[in-house]
Length: 467
Ligand code: HEM
Image (cartoon, rainbow, N blue to C red):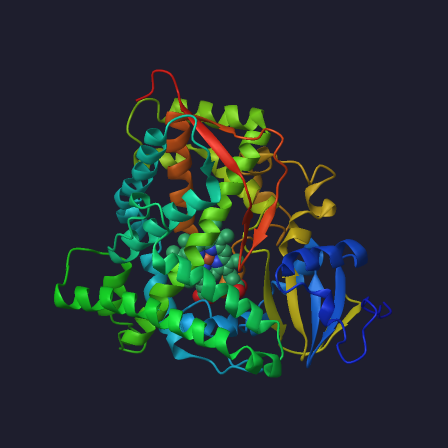
């Protein structure tokens, strides 16, 4: 087969294609480019070429980790000011810019089991505790109150990680203002994003912003360090949470425990990686359920059958298959992390025809892959949880659904997020009949490191006879 040139928007003098990417909303730019140019497009950016891939077939090649692997890109490297060599932002192999970091491997080996089924089982009660706080708050606010979904689900996800992973209560549901840590985190992520889209020279000119960022990082590290000091001063040998694992478990392969700085980086990493993603997904889920009354009723019917008037318990979760499918379908249509990046090990021909160089960076545009008609059918833009029901999930074309990333660097918190989301949704459906405040609401999206609905409000009414 002949090589086919990779399409490229017309470059500008000196800037190349830099202005094709909106720093405030990169995922909208990548999708616009995918709409214009199709399954693959190249951008010439200062010092590098970025290839954006948007089809299932090409995604499947990108997901072969013999050919491609994750090296944290520019944006993630900026976030390292906050998360250092924590799992998300460290390098597990020698890359072009970064060297392999042993701490990734140590933390990965120690934490994969802690996030596994046994670990999650132990977290069920704490997850339920926080969800119950949300139910109580919504109940007390009454059925006329407009609930800002993104806001409240963010409180939920934040509190849940704090309690389940290191026994700390942020108590987001007891205060009108978000916890300072949450606000600082949002600011630091925003500033890091902006830094990554600017040249070094421009960054020097934004010195005051960098000072602000570093101060906030210091405050956040300070809080987390206090939690660690408190645990060390008052050990809780029975609390089999992630903090104990990180502080005391020995990695068999290296014979080491994690160093304290790395523990702090990983704690912040869980808060960063776990709260916006989970809260965004829950907000999108409710948007989808309320826009699709049939799906909503099916979900509620299943909760009535499985949970009824009983208190939700761990053994009920696997039976809530429709909820699980509705969440998977939401992650398909509205992936809160809209893309992830890899680099090639060598020059190669993608799809047998597109020339990729070892110096390129590849961005996998999940919106494109998750809306590829060739993989999902002509109704790809409709919300249909049925696509995932009855084992159909296993028969999807390979790499057509990648909201949790890929391979060794896929999301370590996937089971955590799934358990929390099913549990919360079941508790909500059991008690309330939610509705949209504005039935004509059209999905608006806001973008930070993740995307979530903007201005989406629900009202909740107690279901008659449900206590
Ligand atoms: C990695 C998505 C929830 C912790 C990732 C990646 C994605 C992702 C796409 C790979 C990023 C990349 O390749 O650069 C999601 C989604 C979530 C979710 C959609 C919820 C719906 C969570 C939670 C936690 C978490 C709850 C922790 C409590 C992490 C960590 C990594 C990661 C530590 C880095 C793993 C590594 O590279 O070793 N996640 N995530 N995530 N996620 Fe999640």
